[in-house]
Image (cartoon, rainbow, N blue to C red):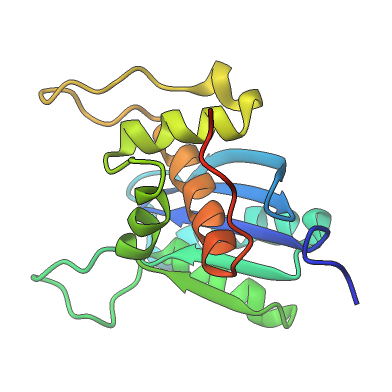
Length: 177
């Protein structure tokens, strides 16, 4: 059996037409990260097919022992059973490979960063850069209230999801200097 410092997880943050991902080996090693987009306006079936291909390649080459997905926000106007096509694709591809899936709520992710005094997305991204210095070149500028979210923030959201998973599993890291 592998030591918890060698276990690979693949974390996702999925939106309607794009997703961010992060591949961890243990809690302290970030192997790969990035984002992928699905053509806006694609029919659900087409979007799921396109997302499935990308997710399948991530699972094939990353060889994760678990998949972690940030639970999508519930919109009061949509039924609770509605999921983005990308989340459906993640769940389907993981199930096809018998990879267990853990869901992380937004609250669980925020809780993992309270020890570091981070509560906003910008603060969490800055904390992640301190823990994983290789992310510094990808750190988006701090968002002003009138600006839309920077396109790179979805990658930091996926990394935060994976980091929160490790925090939940009890492999907590000390606060950065």
